[in-house]
Image 1 (tube, rainbow, N blue to C red):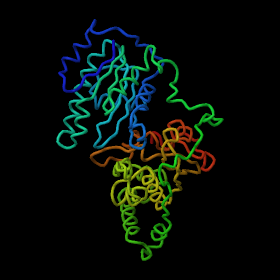
Image 2 (image 1 turned 30 degrees about the vertical axis):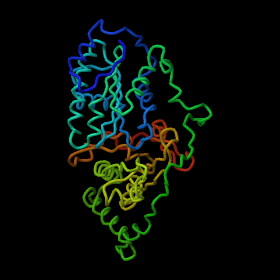
Image 3 (image 1 turned 90 degrees about the horizontal axis):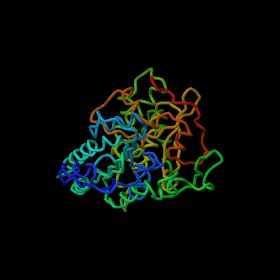
Image 4 (image 1 turned 135 degrees about the vertical axis):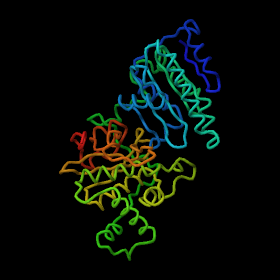
Amino acid sequence: MKPYFVPVRLALLLALVLLLPGCGKKEDASTAQDAETILRVMLAELAEYGEADALRWYLEPDDVDGYLKDCYKLGDIPWVDGAVVRIEGARAFELAVLRVDEDNVEPVVKALQEYLVSRQAAFTGYFPEQANMAENGQILTRGGWIALDVCVEMETAKNAFESCFGNGVNAVGIPAVLGPEQEELCSDGRLAYVDPRTDDMTVFDSAKILAAWESGDHSGLTQEEEAVLDAAGQVLKEWTKPGMGDYEKELAVYCWLTTHVDYDWSHYTKRGAPRTSYEPYGPLVEGKGVCLGYATTFQLLMDMAEVECMTVVGASFRNQGNHAWNMVQLDGTWYCLDPTWDHINVDQDYPPEELRPMYRYFNVTSDYMAFTDHQWDYDSVPEAAAEDYGQGT
């Protein structure tokens, strides 16, 4: 069936009529791509491609299944393949690619239409531009493939989706837009790191704050440093307990950081985010930060909790933007974690053990980071090779 888009403002009945057999010209729905690749092809053509830190991905089967059930209300409809990426908070942007049996295309389209109506309602009156984007969201189909597209550049996304099917340029093999050239790869297959220099990634010096924490003498601190130390001490008081091991403290602090600090969206404005968002002051005092702010805040809290930790400054999106994350040492072994990309929107505090299964970048290997679009100077930090510490505990 020929791909099409249906704005939310049209009646649901119209979507169903368009899906009836015999409506529209039958087109080649063959493709060598999976849902994630098609999604990335679409994203690569949009302005949001450059907002790596803001994007939340749902790629693992359990994550996708949960999202389809909770958000799209598709619990009773089996799916073959799926991937979702969105920007959370006061942003309507969202892309999803699903593959279902062709007999189930009609009910899926109907459910997505209803979802778009609910998204429009959520933004109406508060964020008019976002409400308008949701109102004009489009649903594309090709055989058993369905794509949800909520963005400004809808025609661009539609063309990118179509390019993945039939005789489209991205229909066979891995699209060039996603795959690096051979000369860009290291011998182990990792993308060679090149500092994009898009941000000032100077790491905050927390030595004075740590000295004051250890000595109890705050007299040498500035007002801002005092505020950071007080806030950090309060986090440790509320989220850690005497007798906790390093892993328990690490998880508790990670849960606080990923659920109580918002991403500073001003990072993507012409003016950019203030320097405080790159340092612990932003997350701890103002409740917001960018990736380096998340990483240096986690570093400070781990240092105060006496857990071995480091901040890794590197890049993402094929070296197109700077990014930062952390590594921790547990029982003599290093692990990677990315609190920015693991941000979760919750409306209340949950025990860390309940949040743990929701994280994709907590205590993972260096290989996992490298092949989920993290680049860094691979010789400058320890290699994290052990499997996930704490999984299932």
